[in-house]
Amino acid sequence: MKRTIVAGLIGLVFGAGIALSGMANPAKVLNFFDVAGQWDPSLLVVMVSALAVAFVGYRLVLRRPGPLLEPSFHLPTNRRIDLPLVGGSAVFGLGWGISGFCPGGAIPALGLGEATAWAFVGSMLTGLFIARSIRQANAASAATKTA
Image (cartoon, rainbow, N blue to C red):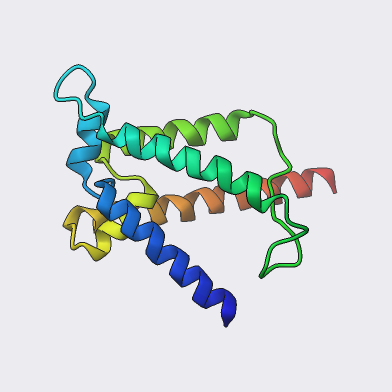
C-alpha cells in the first residue's frame, strides 16, 4: 500500500512537471524540433534541468545502502548498444517527431483533455502489444530450435 501511494505521488509530481513545462503540448514540442523554422528552445531548458536533477539525484540515492521501499536497486545490467536498442530509439524518435508526443508527455496530456493524446496512447499500447508478441514468438522459435 505504501509503495502505491508513493508511486502515485511521484506520478503526480512528474505529470505536473510535464504539464507545466509544456511537454504535454504537441505543438510546443514540434516547434522545438523545427530548428529551420519556428524553433522554440524553451524545452531545451526543461531537458537540461531534468538531466541535472537526475544526475544529482542518482549520485545521492546510490550512496544509500538500498532503496526505501524495495530490497535492492533495480539498475540495468546490459550496457550493449545493439539493434533492438538502436531500432527502438529510432522508432521512438520518429514517433515523437511526427506526433509531438512521447509517452511521458502523452499520459499527462490525457488528463489535460488533449484529444490527440488518446489516439497516441492507443497506438502506443498497440505497438507495445505487437512488439511483445513478436519478442515472445521469436523466443519460442529459438527455444524449439535449441531443444
